[in-house]
Length: 189
Length: 189
Length: 189
Image 1 (cartoon, rainbow over the protein chains, first blue to last red):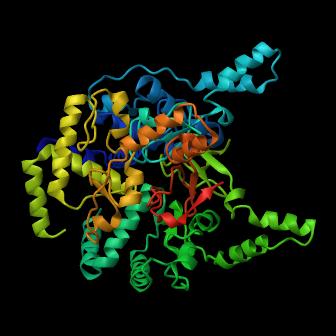
Image 2: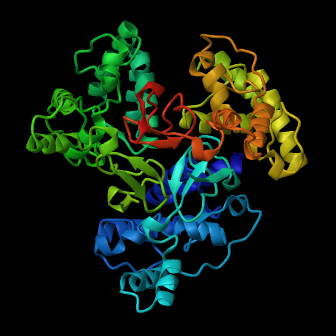
Image 3: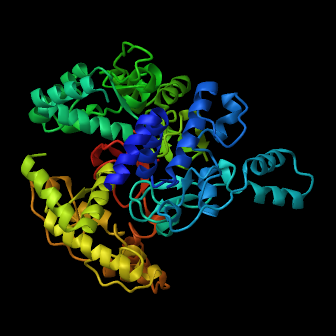
């Protein structure tokens, strides 16, 4: 770390101590699991303020970029990190808030994309999937929609380096255990 | 960290260097996996002394609050962290020694409970389950006792945030990968 | 850390900054998952130089002790950490390069062994296993060879302490989540 960087960090720490502490924790926990935070520190600290406000208001850290309901049960999918972080990182290289970004964006090699909110789309698909299907064709459509959403439809992935198993639509960008890249995962069994 | 706290830590480090080093390692490893140590440092350092003594005496860190047999094979379930840490944290908010505690107790929001030792109870249940059942009713009882104890009876849980899979009686309090709370786990498949 | 050690580290950091930074990252990530680096720092920094050269040359960190093809798809199994780290650590206490070593070797309690390269052996076995078998006896042999290599033949292991699941030929030396030793794993289900 350069002296300038150290000075700047000390200044953040002094001026925005709570946001800074939360940022440090999420950064440490994220990196330990192969997730990266947005490299724009001012932007991230604003998101931390949003998370802290939601924590205070609702008792849980609902996503600062979405409208929370205020009842934990209804907001479970958008407590940060949200259920959509994984597919959004895979499809767009960033989560909806752009708090979590791909390794390329974290290193500044690429800029952030605009991310659509997949929450309502998926909830609608889930709701439709629960209704009795009217025809075989429709049933097949519903089945398609469920892939990657309901637990029963999710494939299991195995890291060929360390044997880590996880169940998700697609393998993670990095193995959270050994940091191998996603192309070293295989379907299991 | 306050100056007073830093001074106190430096003093521990000087006076009880081995216990302090083990404490630091367990704290780091625990927090990385969503486990928290008791906030009472003096109490924890006494437990570290017990662990170090057992390490020296037996060659493995048997639980400092239980009577070890001295043969690794017989003590496997009580090498720290013991097999009972997970269910005790879930049921009581602390392990039998109160070395590991829930997040609430770690932050001082709740005080430690008294924890019964579930070791013998479970071993007896396991032993009975292995004996041939005398009647169908008894067999059903044994089956009930086995839930959460034998591997074959354990459910698999999936973290909806990151896809992490684990097999335990109940989901963990925190996902060890992404730190999501237990209510974001679902049964898999 | 002793003053001498701190001085020596500062000197490495100054003279070989990139190799040192990579070493620090691999050490941190490794230890977080229960893997240990060779305690000979000069030796490890030479391996880091090799990895950095390969990263520069090929765009990925191919094993510095093997001849890379240069096409990522063909080298996937030897991107560090390679697919052979786990079985080599289990069989020999070190990976092919001796970058990763067992806990005993890391603490200096044992010296490094000479490690044969299992890569070609396993690739040949895999190739033969894919060819149609000429006889039942030969088929049985092929089946034997596949154990621990094809995903379909791998057993799932469960850590009895935390419930972690992984699919590998044998359980890991340490649970990457709770650091329990391998004898606390059981077959699942």
